[in-house]
Image (cartoon, rainbow, N blue to C red; front, side, top):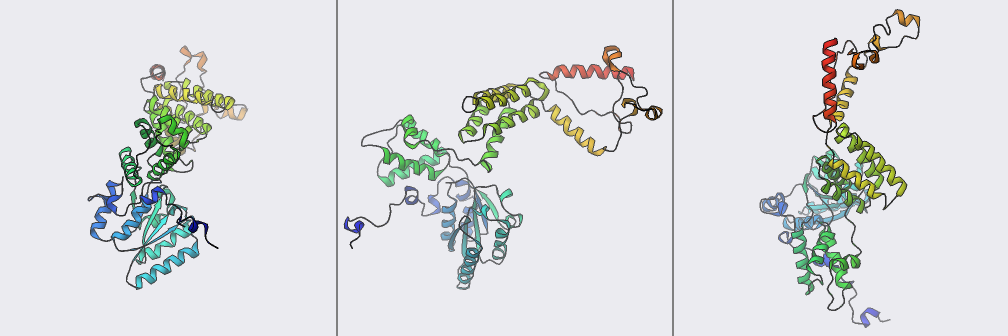
Length: 434
């Protein structure tokens, strides 16, 4: 029976996606990784030397890790053997190693490219070590996870980590220009919509090309989209964000440091980014409570109260109404006077507690509920502070063998300026009455 596609004069192969058609054919065509591929870049020097060691490519999706791996194999005359940790088991690894050994005996080396290498468990990662050491393969692993946490130390010690960067706006623009050249038509976008598309790509070249294809498919003849229409057409791609991976920790770090740095605008931006990416608002509420304690402390005693109230408000109102309470808290914390004096004091007190954990309190501050304890001096000489002038006796409460220590040293700002005055006054009284 005649094939319907053949009868219609159509090709049997499905159309290739734009990202595949634009895949670079040489290292010179790779966009956005000039720090690695330039003449003085790490990979540029290796290619010039004509030899490679094992490498780990670490970077976000859509930055060219797989493409660069394939082109490196071509540039150094190695056979390119790609596998993915998602679909590869122990038997598949053994087969790949055997193939590489046979190829080596025939006089050619193998670049074994392992995508998502962090998904292999410890035993699977260890299986690479012998074939790396004896030169059976040149391993190039690609990962979106921090190699320090995701890969074995033994594997890392045998491979060089190279960082791939997200594509900046200029690189995405260059990619779009290439897409328009190969398509033979311009993207039907006004200037603002084009800028919006570039932002939606979030540094991911593959995503930028996929979004471009969606726009070309959606546009009717002569139609030009503005920024608002673009968002409706592509339903706005979610930011690259994995709540169990680096994106999660990088963004919460950016939020925390923006609050600590008293920048409410940046803090609100990172807060909104995390919510927009699907972060649990209660996780953010807990972190805001921590910021109030760690970075503001008693410089603004209301900060902790505001943070707890914002969490409670969100729990009552939910999304999206309760998010405003959290945003209010972000601004309050970012604009509050900053002090880590309590944080520092607590760490110092913990260290002292571990060092002097066997010391007993001085007997004069202990209760004496029995005659024996009274005879042993428990409670003897204790001065009731409310009976002393200024309600301050000035007696020592530290273990005798330890002596007085100062852990809390408030700065002269915010509410802690008042606390500093009180402490200085009590120190003066203590010196007079000792």
